[in-house]
View 1 (spheres, rainbow, N blue to C red):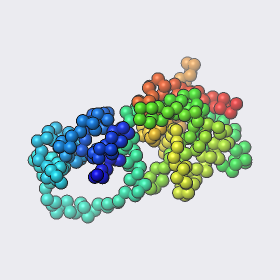
View 2: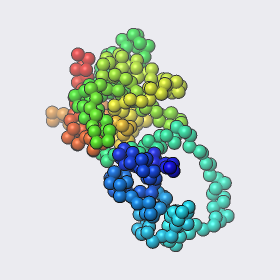
View 3: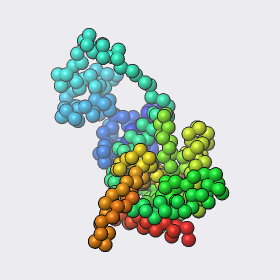
View 4: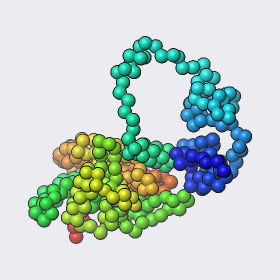
Length: 334
């Protein structure tokens, strides 16, 4: 039985299983699902004598409007390659000129690290698999800033760690997730798994790439415990001293770019999570309150959701809960 490579193709778990059992290479199948995802029916309807074509050749043909069935393949066993499609378009690659050689001499090629390759694969799978949308909501952070000011000396004395606004956001996130389980859910095939606990992943940027270490059972933590856990896992991530278990098992992810002055962004879901929260910068804005104009420290929360699991109303209610908690942070300490 021939060995096939199917792990990097967008396909449902059932489609992958059937392909393995039948020895079918998913690279040769055109998916009929969202964003070209291969479904069970696509594998069942596949015939060995169907046209063989590389994924890149098929994509170029789709973009250029070329009927791939009319292209003669020059690859192994008649497989249609990128060069075949380009030839059919009359766009055969021109031999490099002296000018192109000069450009190449001034270009630095950096091979992707293993970490970068894994990140690229996972982000691509997430982006092309899940139909997503992002909701944004502004939050008045005045009272959260006041709370941080009130407790920072006490927590520093007790733990040796400085409490940040991110720590307060993490605490609010765990409280909100316990009230909105679908935002804390995972998708497994045709099943939605609702978790009655929060394993909170926190995105940490390194020079080599992005890691998402997990704070286990974060829903049970006080603010002081959250500060300790968050600082510990971030520091060990920066030093690359995490165990494999600490990078697995998350139910939700928080990614913060506020320290870089970012006002809005669309974070990509860290699968198998069904949502991810982006935390933006706090900026002073003119806000009308009770007929008066005031300057308030405002922050936007950006929530990206997997529409297969979560509808807009559920996401909006989660953000409303986050807004209430951050604008009334003392309620989290009671």
